[in-house]
Amino acid sequence: MDVDADLGQGQREAVEDGSAAGAGLGPPASGAEQAERRLEHMREVAAPSLGYLSLEQMLSEMLERIRDELRADTAVLLLLDEDRGVLVARAARGLEEEVRQGVQVPLARGFAGRVAAKAQPVIIDDLNHADVVNPLLRQKGIRSLLGVPVRVEGRVIGVLHVGTLHQRRFVQEDIALLEIASDRAALAIDNARSVEQRAVTEIMQRTLLPEALPQIPGLRFSAKYLPAGTTVRIGGDWYDVFQLPSGRLSLVIGDVVGRGVLAASVMAEIRTALRAYLMEGHELSQAMSLLNELLVAMGRNRSATAAIIELDLESGELASVSAGHLPALVIEADGSSRFLEVPPGVPLGISLHARYERRRDQLPVGATLRLYSDGLVERRGEAIDEGLARLGSAAQAAAAAEDASFADRVYRRLVDETSVEDDIALLAVESLPLGPSLQLTLDAQPGVLAGLRSTLGRWLASEGVAENELFDITLATSEAAANAVEHAYRAEQATFLVSCEHEAHSVRVAVRDRGRWRDARSYGRGRGLSIMRALMDTVEIERGEDGTTVVLTKRLATGAA
Image (cartoon, rainbow, N blue to C red; front, side, top):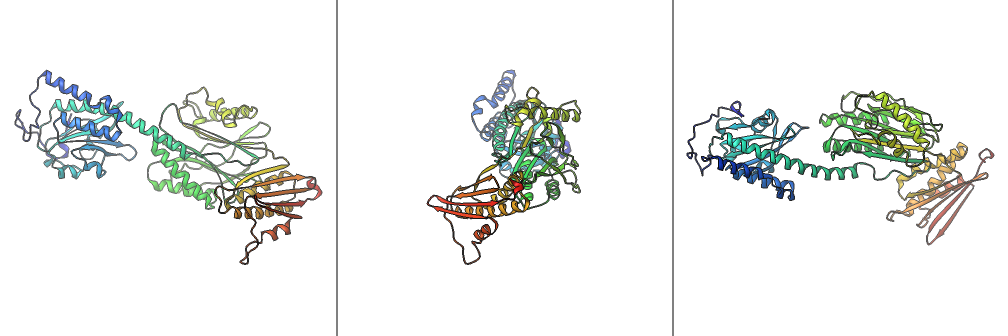
């Protein structure tokens, strides 16, 4: 027990049994039978019946029982926010203002902060002669306080304290009773918080990772995310895939240091900010620098690793930048593997002056690109090089199998029979050969046009179409698609189809929508048809009640046959 003499000049005063001021606030004389009765009542402070209440209701009822049994005027529970180093008022009876005003007490400061920092009971006999950081205690007229730490498995998670409006000399029996209540409360709080966190985890896991992987001809995506062990605490691992306005594909993998909802919330902020930076057109190194500055400015003592890779769909070129993340793995068409050579950079949030370097590489047809978080390869007591070598071997073996997605095959070979000690996020992109035909179903939104041009350019290049002819076909198809988007402008969830065929010495492209053709307008619109006719050999427009089809044909040089 620690009498809080440091907080002021509060001294114990001799109080005879039954002489305390107020309505019998001093503990009455009690024999062994009365003491046992009080102990039994306190053991029931977190009775199973309270488990059916919400956490707030349970805490309120629990504090009321504590206040009654200790014959106190106030009972308050503060829970520790470990990341910020403060105690936050979570529930109160008789001092509800603490919760309504969001009282926060720094560790080692004031009454509650001292209880938590020393992990021992603290008593203030007379608040009039003590220094406290919470003005509500004086405003309420509290004279005496008794506080004890709330522990779970030896770790302090909060403080439970009671107070009286009249000066009172708390004795050892009061401390014992409040510590019993604290132990009971700790179990109930821990269980309730686990339920709360499980619900939050499920929501965050559904919202923070991509709802679905994109469907892009010539590319096959697979991904996997697994939390560590059986814990309900979500971590900060994540992956993301999205197409940029330029038509390039952005692939992201990252890992925020730490666990729990705060780590996941930091991850969500990073993910959202990174999308915004890349969609605005920032170059990869600049986007990573902006992300680093953001994380430093957040001031939460959080760091993260991340890697960004942009894939040019037409050329297969990769542009990569890393902030302390493990290198991406490329499995070539012949089954050999290699890691992308990208300067690792400084993890995000470590230094405001960190700089990041972009490197270029290639993802040829038939190759697979794999991004992953460290939980996939790291093992306790093992060098990271061993884990990377194991990943390369597993990826080579997975490339030869076809029984599941590539991500699932690699996962099974690495961790299927191993206890997962860290979260795992992994993303695989397989570059597949394109055949002589291409079929696309696209949302009728302007944002899809850049991706259409990139995908069509990649297909034409794979068919050996000359660069000048590739340009003509791509631009003409883009104009036809833009008209299809305009047709469906007011439709909900409208789509249009693009069908491409390479036959003999020609390419035929059909763009079909369910709207109505719009003729040229006097204010400069409607020139798309003129552009199509100037670039292609034939342009046919089929209008009907069910929509419009534009058929474009281009005769090719003999070398593309």
